[in-house]
Image (cartoon, rainbow, N blue to C red):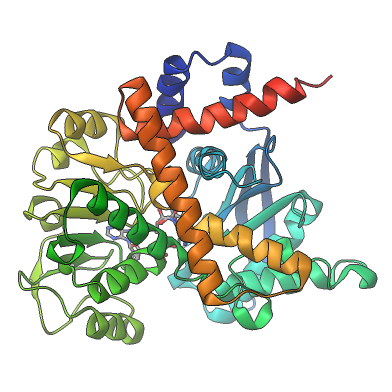
Amino acid sequence: MKLFEAALSHCHKAAELIELNDDYLAILSEPQNEIIVNFPVRMDDGKLKVFTGYRIQHNNILGPYKGGLRFHPAVDLDEVKALAAWMTFKSALVGIPFGGAKGGVTIDPDEYSSEEIRRIVRRFTHALSNNIGPDHDIPAPDVGTNSQTMDWIMDTYSNTSASSDRQAVKGIVTGKSVECGGSKSREAATGQGVLYNLRHWCGQHGIALDTLSIGVQGMGNVGGHFARLAYNEGCKIIVAGDHHATIKNPNGLPIPDLLAWINTHGSVEGFPNADVVSSEALFTTTMDVFVPAALENQITLERAKKMDCRLVIEAANGPTTPEADRYLTDKNVEIIPDILANSGGVIVSYFEWLQNKSAHYWSNDDIQIKLRDLLWDAYDEVLLFRHRLQCTNREAAYAAALERLREVYDRRGIFP
Ligand code: NAD
């Protein structure tokens, strides 16, 4: 099954449960705009290379298109369409005034120098031109991009805007560095949001957070920050992996040392205080909670059959295939679905956008309280829908999102 088809399969199931009007479902089953740009960039050796970039704008009934930019060799139209659709449902679920979009460039960023990446980012931004804008479509970091990427996009966009608008366009991207107008707490927000979800789940089940053993796939922005915060709460991260290696320590990995190691060496590979294991150990190790924080389609049916955990929190987008989802549900493994679990990122992106608009910057404490409240409200909404519809967390999350979209379509109508 293609990724976009898989993304829609959850939406269609939830649409059935709430008897969503077929017209709305038809609209949500295709992205509104699909933008593909091919743009040339001069490499360090003087040769010219043409890159392909995407920006998919799925839906903007609730507000400006919003979603990350991915730099990865597997980026293609199907993947970006799925990621864009998930953004629509995520923003709708957590009740923020954004639509859904996603973009990317098909490259392996590790193969290019920092100067080459800077030129790729600037030329891609220029190629997207008026297809993005602070009140139209607002990119953010995703796999392979970070605050430095966002600073370059903001700078390029600002320098190609009218001089009178240059300060007003800071909100063209979120996830910028704090120095360039980013929000405090944005970088860690997605991992922090995953932890707030875990804490809520523990409260719901009467489980102490510091008794949990956890496995984390992907030790980048999301997985790394989640692991750090969970470790600080007393959780044991017993297995962790990235695209180079997987390591295990049944007594718990020393996460601060591991993150310092990753910072210097770029990977968990070679970390001294752990056993090197196969990447399949992420799926075969007995643990309380598994946190996929890498890419989509990681929990396949075959892997699901070997998993021994109570809870999967989907920090990554689309990490579980529909077949694996059904299998785990039948096995009573609870899943906190991606559109809820990793929504901390877009929530604090929304805060950054608000701060840019008002030029008034909030404290870490303000952001944490507002983030936690929005997330826990969304979590409770999912529980309400689950109870009402007698369905899974994922179906309930989609149903809650669709309900919000339906209310707005009902009131606005479909133009003309
Ligand atoms: P990142 O580039 O910072 O980190 C990705 C990590 O995944 C790296 O450690 C990489 O080595 C690892 N990885 C890649 N392929 C792997 C594989 N096959 N097996 C094991 N590990 C692998 O990216 P990120 O920003 O942390 O994003 C991770 C996931 O979270 C993605 O699905 C992304 O869409 C999602 N997400 C990110 C944000 C955000 O704010 N950055 C927000 C919401 C959702």
